[in-house]
Length: 387
Length: 83
Image (tube, each protein chain N blue to C red):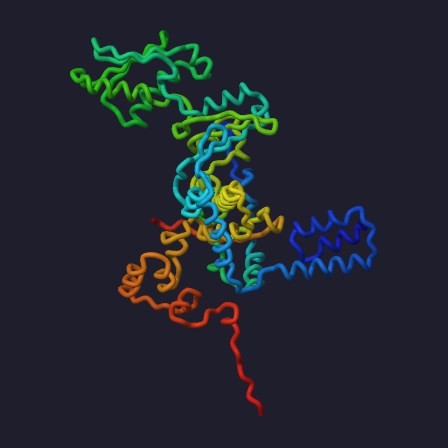
């Protein structure tokens, strides 16, 4: 292909992707100037024809295009399936979760990528996973309840601590602090013996067995290593590198762990993404999650529809749900809001607040029985008097 | 902290750039819109903090689009409303 042609393609008013496709198609082909002209002209008109018209009701089309395949999904699926021994919500429940902009998905999971130094080595990947997986104290040693002296004795297993790469002194310091801070249980005193790796917990009330057992429960389950929200980590090898899959999600804390690739690691918790990475990342996450949920079920929905939905949800700077607490509930028109959900409340509130409906939208005009400003309703005929 | 997190390096975060006043007025006149009609983003958005934009700035966002390959979008930085 002549460099002159390439330049002309670059200058044309076409999307980058179309330009690249055109270039790829033309490379290695011998094309006369005349042919090239007609090819480019044809591509330009085709592109113009595929563009959506101004004032087209894209929202309705998007709603149909996602809604109809959605009905297929309800009937066909088992909504729960495992990826790498980790259960994730799939199908319609997941789609609803995304559109409702839930603060927390029912099955939060993360996909943690590792830096190149760590991603090739199974042992290093395992070490990173120990820094992430929440491990309770009972995994690090024996916990015995000494009824005679009314105390709880923890003997740490030094070999386990070494294997898990956590110094005994750290556990001894973290355990009592975390019981107070995270579990909000303060009715105890503790003594630490760092040399023989023991911690002794003594309840303040030494008369009650109930207190002793309650304290034992806290001691057993206090998390001394890893990130509290992440219950389980699975290491898997995928296309030549080790990837960690987790049950539970905490993007912010995981980013601070040594060895984690902070450019690729992701979570399925969209509100967390919007907090940590910003609204634009949340928009991308909505598109990605919705598209993968749908295509997982073998349902093909054009990205454009999902992009529109994601754009609407992220318009105001935070993720808003589609529904009465979000987009549908913040519409300008009273009638439009009343047509969606909780009709009476909206009409009553509007009456109290003396609201006026300008009848600019589609829904309002359908309700009052006027032509809408779309399609044939958009055309106004003006008679020209015959002189 | 060993991993200094730069939000803009993440694959899910597109490029954010503060637009100059000239560019902004050109944008408004070419689409004949006002700043109120732009999509918004909050002043405490992590990406806004990284590029150091202030309230009232318009940010050009260069996305890698599924459909067009590359798409530009604009957002106005506003103050996060109090709940």
